Length: 225
Image 1 (spheres, rainbow, N blue to C red):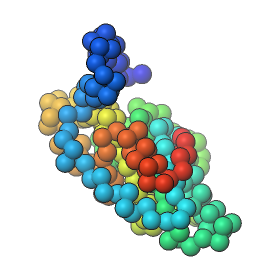
Image 2: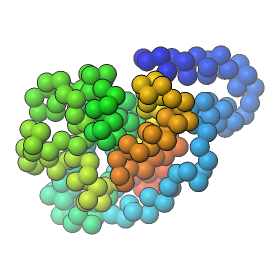
Image 3: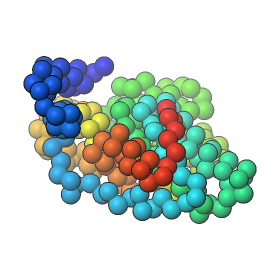
């Protein structure tokens, strides 16, 4: 567990007695506020409207795990079409990137500048050799053969897959990483970090929020990593 997460948990633990006197909903809100002070308008919550298929699933990715969670999502979508006689339009998939998997939501420039591969001991999905590349962005030039290269985040987006990222993980992991390395305030670091979020990936109040919202929209839950 890194220092930022230990500090966050310490704050929550220290305030637990005070929180226990509050209604449950208020206690949860108080804990969440430690990691995020974003307003509701900062998040695009319209994405469930894109989940229009007969077969719907939300894949919950909490670990980087060489990007295998993306591969599992692609495999499920393909199997539904192959074995249930479904068309691509019949299949809707949302993938939530939270906890350590928040790094998969960031561009290669972020990985390069802040040494994410080394910091998280990331392994290439095919060779299991250490890599400094974001597994969500690998393709044929990176040693990922067809059909596995079709699991890359941008390629899945092009097929209508919705990618959602946890703002709490972003605030507790990505922003402090930028602030420490660049020696800037967390407010400025957030602005810098937001520029590195991959196009089309939607930050949500939390990964858990995104998962439950997808379930409310009719998605079957899958623990992907």
